[in-house]
Amino acid sequence: MSPEREAQESEDMLESIDELKERLTSMKKMMEERKSTGSGTKDLFQGHARSLQGTTMIDGNFLSFVFGGSLFVILSVSVYAFYNLYHAVLKKFPSSHTEL
Image (tube, rainbow, N blue to C red; front, side):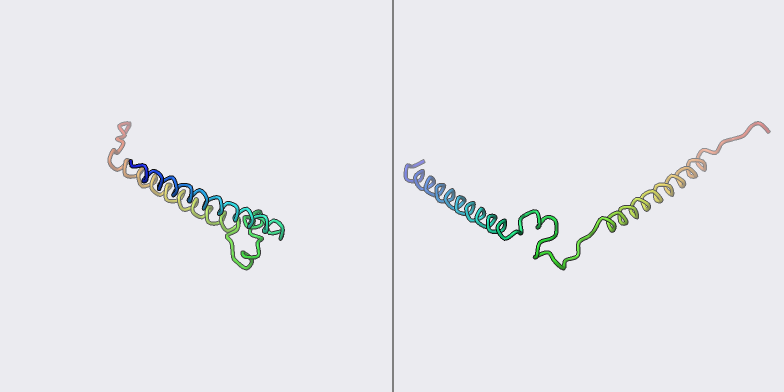
């Protein structure tokens, strides 16, 4: 590599590092402002933030109903498949009774 190309790459790297530092300081300022107003990140993840008011979230009861229904469907399909498999095996290999 030529020395001027290396110098250009090191300048670009320093510029990108400076940009990242500026972003980090701006994010820190935003977080401090949010903490000072009382709406921290905990409120955002709990669904109590002002921006999330009025939105409908899927609650635990609905999810348990959906998962219970899907469990019922899976179990019923499994029972139906094993029932048909059992009868197919009996039809293919009938048991011969010789005691009579």
